[in-house]
Amino acid sequence: MRPDTENPAGPVTTGVADDVAERLAAALRCATVSSEDPEGTDDDAFTQLAHHLEHSFPRVHAELALTRFGHSRLYHWAGAEPGPAAAILLAHQDVVPVGDPDGWTHPAFAGVVDAEFVWGRGAIDDKSRVLAILEAVESALAAGLRPRRSIYLAFGHDEEVFGDAGAVRMAAHLRAAGVRADLLLDEGGVITTGVADGVDRPVANIMLGEKGYLTLRLSVRAPGGHSSMPGGQTAVGQLARAVARVQDHPLPLRLTPVVTDMLARMRVALPPARRKLLEYADSSALGRAAAPLIARLLAARPQTEALVRTTTAPTVIAGGVKANVLPQHAEALVNFRILPGDSVAGVVAHCRRVVRDPAVEIEIVGPASEPTRDPAAGPAFALLADLVAELVPDAVVTTGIVPGATDARHYDGLAATRANFAPIVLTAADLDRIHGTDERISRLDYARLIEFNRRLIGRLAAGAPDEAGTQP
Image (tube, rainbow, N blue to C red; front, side):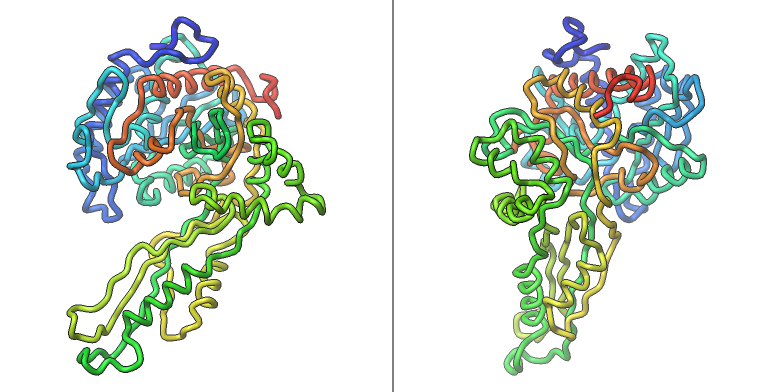
């Protein structure tokens, strides 16, 4: 089952065998689309996936204790000794809807395997991680491995709709049981090529936390009437002006400690001029003076602006019923991803301040979450960095923060090291496939993912991070 039998201690250079690829493909054929409305979830698809997992990984299901929370699955691999758990490994079974099915090379839930790729919704986000973890544990069990301290596997079923029925309940269960782990690992960071401006090496972003999440509804009500006598402004015009003010007055750029750390680790791979500038990205007076310039440079591209700002994205607007009827109601949704150091309350206050119109109602809709507080590399970070160096030796390993939301936020405080990462190598075009069209994972990347988890489990099973010589 090992994906690289020729050189098991070094980089992975060959893709997975057909049977391993087919197990992933079969999981992708289960259309486990989550829905904010529980009535809209296809329970049969999740049941089909559960049967596939139990059939494909018999040792896991014979030897690990499994607790179900709806369709979510929490496995406990009991350790030989008491004490803190070695790890809580997260992944999620659910996927987002397909959107336009006609744009796909292969149908999104066909689970097609060819010579290079496994195709389908969930191939990257996030069924490949579910299956890779199970492949690694099944292999370890076949080899007779028992971890010194417990390892938990937590596979949510509603991460794409904020995890309330899955991750929230599993995390509460672990807290009630007094579980504390050395490492919490979830999705979010990958290895990119050609994405970091001016860097010609692969960049492995082991993320240390995530931004917060907030959606605000801006709404205006008006008497209505005939469009021939509109008065000073309509509800649509008043709303449009409010949305424009919010978009035109974003929260300020700011260089946070986690991004400073990320840039410091990347210095070795940057062009000389930028490397020199980053010498000043620290807490000194000179560093504080250089921070605004560095933030402005990062803000020049949408991909990196998210690192230095709470982002503002108007996403939905509606109002009116007919061209010759004055609208009685208009509303818009604006989504924010909140930078560490900002807060939900602070973003709401900022919007009220810049809109400056008491007739515009501003309210929170849907779930909201605060950003990770003071994200930093924990004691097990170097273990993950060492594994990346083994699997992709030319990669520069750095940190970062997930711009979106993951299940990991629900497990806050349960581990000494929190990380979001998978060792798959993606281009900018590959990143667009996540939640987009033609999602797929290469056989080689899937082999890396399985081998990463195999080696991680092997080292965690051997002892604590400091005993393995992996402290930073």
